[in-house]
Image (cartoon, rainbow, N blue to C red; front, side, top):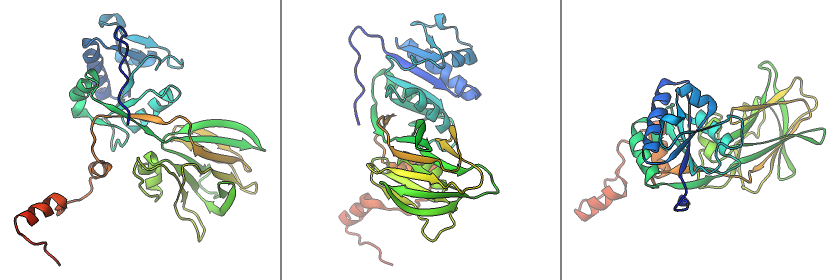
Length: 327
């Protein structure tokens, strides 16, 4: 983890605010956050479309709110972090905006599970206070660099935070693929698709497809076949230096599709080759607390832990002279 960089003494602090403006509660939190941040002398920056959705008059704030074009490259320039209000989908959209600049992302969860978010709806006041007083750290999360080749020619280059999935485009047809690891063929599958994921994405599509949950501190790449008709079709965990490749066999009937984080799609004709490797630009997630990932899993998935005594309980029983119960 890294501490937030302090600006020069005469520099204005800036925070990019991104929100799921289609939801009333997100608009409410965004407006309150803009007022709170500017009230502490921090410049707020908004995308033009979101400023319109929020009905904001930039000049009504002191310091005035900065409004930038949605498709411009200036959204993150000079911002110490991006405050994202919504669910994981909104945070993944923020990742697209902050990817090149490496601006840290702080998510306030208004969605369902919200694994990428650091704060919940009820924590907004304390979240703003943490930003104002710089009580936060940023941790780097491994991303994926994804390349698509057709007839040996590079046609698409993109990235993913959670996963890159190669899927069949037609429900009635199976996708025929060969999977390769580090330049060597591993196996051929008839399947519904293949998921290549990061540890961060291990709780997303990877999890639904039967892949393992991997702690974010582990550096690895994950590969999970989806409904494969094969004897050897198990989830794989490979080194972060490995290169995964999925080739859509030329004999495949119909096309496939590549999805990156479920947001960006690329059509895949028979014969297409998809290469996945560790990305050169990690995603930086803001952390407000040092809570163990185990606690996050328990909270987000509502896992039953009743009956756990833990080391503290065992120490207490030992110090009081009580023995451990053995079944």
